[in-house]
Amino acid sequence: MIHTEGESNTSEARAAWAARHPDAATRALLARDAGAFLHQSLSSPCLSTIARAEGIWIEDTAGRRFMDFHGNSVHHLGYGHPRVVAAIKAQLDALSFSPRRFTNAVSVELAEALGALAPGDLGKVLFTTGGSDANEVALRLARAATGRFKTLSFWDAFHGAGFGASSVGGEATFRSGIAGPLLPGAEHVAPFNCYRCAYGHAGPESCGLACAKMVDFVLAREGDVAAVIAEPMRAVPVVPPPGYWRAVQAACHRHGALLIMDEIPTGLGKTGAMFAFEHDGIVPDIVTLGKALGGGILPIAAVVARRDLDVAGDYAIGHYTHEKNPVTARAALETLAVIREEGLAARAAELGRHALDRLREALDGSPIVGDIRGRGLMFGVEIVEDRGMKAPGRAAAERIYYRCLEAGLSFKISAGCVLTLSPPLVIDRADLDRALGIVVDAVRAEAV
Ligand SMILES: Cc1ncc(COP(=O)(O)O)c(C=O)c1O
Image (cartoon, rainbow, N blue to C red; front, side, top):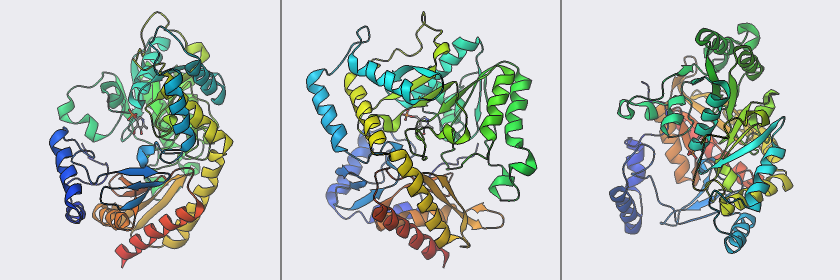
């Protein structure tokens, strides 16, 4: 199985960065972290430390500041948004917890707000603490509603770390031999962006959306799939070809499968629309939200399902201790209010267009840039060894990444070679331009 994820824990570039940690306190904290936590990929042992975070900035314990273009996709509003902080503080005084058999006004208000925000008949809600759990609730609901248990999802997708979520996920890290057997019936298909689209040979007009036809083919052959679960836009980041989701939804209808859209990183405005599936003119049967829903401060995720899928009243499909936590619900309500009142989805669309234009202007034609792509404030630069064959430029991507860190910009590498840039929706245009300048300089320095 291919490991396709981000920057390596053991590369020379990482070792060189680690060797430059300037102070003993930082080195000591990193050593304590490595001693205290179970080690796993892309986590402990950690790359760096964090002492403070505000707006788009994080500051490490050595006093170095970075614009954060990763933020685990929670930071639509930046770090510590004053309105969300104030709302949480007030809620702590008013009502700090709600055991599950009691309801509370804040949680109901949030469920109603999400039902009103989501298009179509998406109106019934359940909260969980994290996104992985929200996806597992969605899968249970799909099983209950269809009487089927199989799923269809993408290779290379990520839907969370739980056993159910990693069964429908397609990343090697979560599906490795040490995980043991995953859920039965979790079928996978190649994601959109096959070589024809990725290499710019032709678009969906000439291939007739072969990628969507493969979904139809598998649904037909299996004959009893409960749900297709996918991210509407791949985190790599890859935008679906026009018509892809409409074709997949039609296939779901033909074969009796539900369509679950995992909007955990893409939702709430990141791609320039409140839900990324809106770009494709579809409304799924179930949508999951998380990450930014807690305002970048508290953990809360949500399942929003079609009203008529409320079919499991006699069973437990979620049942999480913090299902109706009024403090996390308050954080989410205030987050939704800020996103709406400040028009942040439209802002993401506008700034995203600007960023793509600037990157293309500066880097198109670079021998190590394979593609510049994205939607809204989720965009990326693919680094390749060879523009013709598009062999991934993994080592070059890492060197660029550490060069950007040195210059004060943090982000992550996806699929081994894509500089994945996902700034907060509240970023100033001047800061965005500064960050884009850092990326451009780092890529150019690598290309000479
Ligand atoms: C698409 C997607 N789904 C689900 C998850 C899991 O969310 P959580 O880490 O809150 O369980 C993630 C997290 O990165 C994600 O990107």
